[in-house]
Length: 618
Image 1 (cartoon, helix red, strand yellow):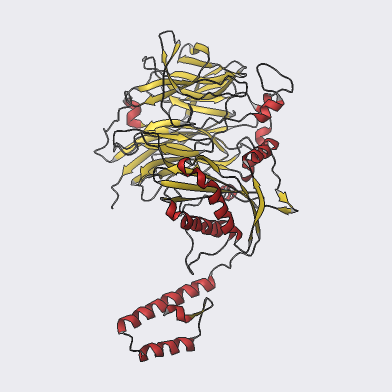
Image 2 (image 1 turned 30 degrees about the horizontal axis):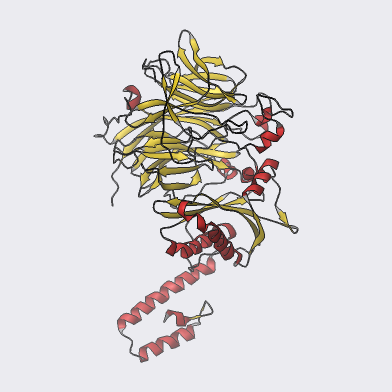
């Protein structure tokens, strides 16, 4: 009946409506049907009124170009890659204001563009493209997930992320239809299919209606305050305890580690800045420098970690580093009277202490490959240290394919006593694997943002063939292997289900065409496993520039150090816990000021946080 009131999608005039009502009465339609009709009419009329006052649909014309979707993680669904891409391209091309260019970039062609570092519009037949469309397929235990990213090729536009999950191949066509509609509405300004209904973006992290503010707009609104924000519905109310402690240092920080290096029971902050190691502590509500040492100029450090593996109640400093093209890691100790001391050097392993379920903190390592360009060989191994800090290779750790030494942590996300693997891939996507190394979930957003990569700096390349460095041609051909930022495992609410704390960086649009990573802003986020997905429980507001390092400790755990990874539930009865968050941020990163000698600076912030745990009503 409602359809009879529409002509070519428009509501009929009042005379036609009255006539239709008269016909209904003459046909003796029961009262219930008439009431239902009238209510429906009121609803349609309200929607029409809302449509009339809504913002007009965009008339802008768009040109987009596709690149070949990634199927490296597609598993048994890999054969669907070309079909998925063709269906999506066809549905977008059917839009009257969207032109899909015939050219499709292969992985090799994209790699070539990145080598050139182009930031120009891609032009075909004299027409510039507005977006480059990239995508990836993931085989999850719950089905196929398709992720699509639109990289803007015009100024002042943001990277747009979309995803859809198909539990079975039978729903694939309908799911691609939904995906194309969401892209059309968000990127190209098409209205939602249902009149009066505004399209809602739902991201896989579980945050409904969360929108990342453009960095410049956020700066103007003073949203780079670094405040900690709780997420509604997470079951945890987060607030600060007193004022945050801050300090600004005239250094270009590369990495941060948190630990007790002097055995006083307090957490110190260790910064890597250039070739210097800087040790800080918190005293009387201030951040104070405790010590400093310089590293040999030939070392390029890509990871700094602290752990007490020799059992002396003081954390050692583990520096994973290269000397030219060779791996040359170092172990150091700190003493308040003697300062930093090197106890082992020239170690031919990439090094990292890892919390292994049932074994506690263990030293793990990975080797470089045999070829000059192969800086990393597959396989992560447990290593043993003797009393003289000599290293012996032990068993290989069973990890999912392509997960490297710096990419992963173990965490019991669901509290069942079995540990999942949480890892970050080279696309900055957070992944969760079950104990059988099967992929369960992959993030839509980018996490563990980092500018650090293995091997010598690109600026150190030489035009000549030098044994310890890449030539210019070799440097252009090598694949940059980035070392993700730290993934922190904790149990804030003491419920036996561990959470993840990790950074989230906002890339610039043109960063896709640069082999190096460029960030506008960043934040630190806490994620918990809820309904088969990682969901935010709290986050900091955005920091302008680049979040280069961070650390977190539960205050009760820092006073009674955890032994072998056991969980402390001393505050479980109160429902309130306290933690301390440490953040190192480069606010001028990427700006012209940062390039001026002496222009670099690092902002250090320390927050005391209180978490109140609430039961979520089901």
